[in-house]
Length: 285
Image (cartoon, helix red, strand yellow):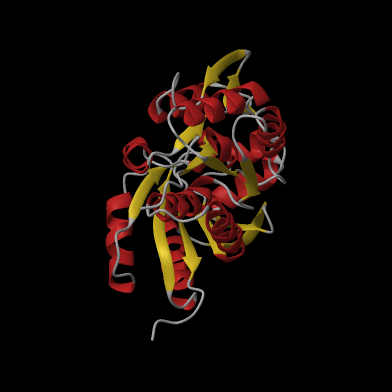
């Protein structure tokens, strides 16, 4: 039996349900959120419902801050004390946050205690979560450190996230769209589509109604060909169960549903719904 024990560390932008993280032994280092001068630790100080309520009451967008290197260092040392032989830290896209930088500084700080490799997921929310889950399963099966690192890097090139926004309010607050434009788009019931591309959140199109936006997401999944690790992300959406049912005919495996956390949610806004998946490396034979 292998004495190798690789453990996975990530950050709270992964939006994985806590039960999934617990089952797979994934260590999650939280980002912090600042709303109107008050700081909150992601996942610890605010439930998603409280977060959305505070967002609605504030004229400003929340700000998110990367964890300090010390928080990653503490996580690495905890895992070493728990018997880990090495750590693979898979983090929020470096193009979106300084979180990767903190993880790398911390890795150097524990070099004499435990080897740590930091991987840029080029993703956020459950795109990151999908990669982390997959690698945690591989590690739990006794894979080598390098095999887990290679898998994470490979998945980073094949993972996709698409989302349909329900409101333009947050884009307006963030200055990404003018008030007049936002009013016009809202009157026309425009639902912007976003896509994570090359590690950044980009515009992926627009649809005229929520129904059409959800149909677009289903079609995007179908057109992607064979996929792995399908997940559904949602920001306090009442129609999430119905959306999962629309996806089921096109995917045989388990569909993990997670809440969009503050990192993406503060820009996308309440009501955002989307999909994360990995394009299969080769069609099943």
